[in-house]
Amino acid sequence: MARTPLAVKSATWGLLAVMATGTAAYGQAAGGPGSTSGSSSGLSTAQVNQAQQQLTTGSVSGGSSGQVTSDSFKGSVVSGVATDGVIDLTIDDAMQRGLRTNLGIILQSSSTLNANGQRLEQLQALLPTVTGTGSYTVEQVNLAAYGISFPGLKQIVGPFQVEDFQASLSQTLFNLPALQNYLQAKHNFKSAKFSAEDARDMVVLTVGNAYLLCVADAARVEAVKAEMATSKVSLDQAVSAHDAGTSPKLDVLRAQVDYQNEQQSLISTENQLAKDKLALARTIGLPLDQKFALTDSAPYAAMDHVDPKTAFDSALKNRKDLKSLDESVKAAEAQKKAAWEQQLPTADVNGFFGDQGTTLGHSHGVYSATGEVTAPILQIAKTRGDEQVAGAAYTQAQAKLSDQVQQVNQDIRSSILDIEAAAKLVEATKSNVDLATEALNEAQQRFHEGISDNLPVSQAQSQFEQANDQYISALYQHNVAKLSLARALGVAQTSYKDYLGGK
Image (cartoon, rainbow, N blue to C red):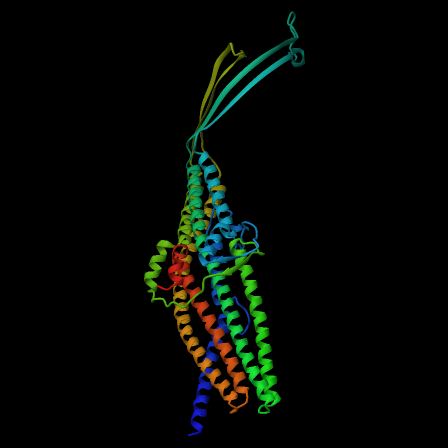
């Protein structure tokens, strides 16, 4: 009968070891807040970076989208100055600040303005152009300088004056390449606008990830403080037992090492929280010396199963990057047509009407009107070259759109898999925490009663710390996976609260 509790405890420790091994393996693979590598930029952060890269390289936005990189969404334009107090920062506040000041949005908005400017430039080629001129000339001419010399003719003519006022008009009547160039610029402008809208979803994903990462760090700080308090209790027990002569010095040293390890862990976790808060401030435009407190937590909220096919059909309607690429295809098609249509003749009309004379009272109307038809006769190499260049651009645009459609499908399915896996991991790690807590309490009680030394206490503390760490990491992974799904569906900006809170 005396062996039964020990057998139960051995089985419990075996179960804890198996679960800890499984959760540690997941944490190391994910690199989340609870990973043994110590890195807080895990699988979810890698997904965020990948999504940012797809945005900046997967669409055309008026010729200057190359200014926007994945790192752009990690920066911002600082708004305001730091205050002396500590401001409360909710996730909604962080989102709104990010949508106003994030560098990715600002650069993408500039790209949109650039694309609109190019559209207006191409439009002017189809509109009438009217210019006005006015001149006043006083002149004296030496006829001898021009070889004009006749008996009785004055060699010096003048001085005399001429006043001239004119209005000129030029209008393209028929120019298909110019029309196609305008249509291309128009589609590029629409593409840039859709990219700017998609950038807002990207900011929500980036800011949300940064905020959730800080929440996870803060939870780890609180957990380490609790673990340090538990270690202090164990240390006090070991010291008391040693002073009473019932425990060897080794128990005191072991408990002291555990306590100091917790102190070191607290320093590391607090430092990581401070750095991640700096990264969050950079993302949302807060001054880096501004102190702020996170007021929202990230509780676990299970999410209903999402059908991948239904979600994909919804994403095809909502994803702005797909609409941007579709406009890029249309722009490339217009460029392709313009390359062929440059062989066609163009028709223009030019003219002016004015008033000319020595003075305003001694002047007369003057005018000129010219109609002109221009047709290329021999430029075969240029035409074929332009056609091939435009054809290649059109093929590339179609391929990018097709690939991005499949990428969206993959993103949705990957996010659903991550949500389901993280949900199971949350349940497993929560059970692991409960078991580890029970094992730690029992080990402390046995040491307090003098049944065993504090080696099981030290082991139980280590298991509890690891289990708690993995539980925090699982919560982070689950929430970021849901946020990634919202981005994959193209509804991150409007529905991120629903996805973070469960559905």
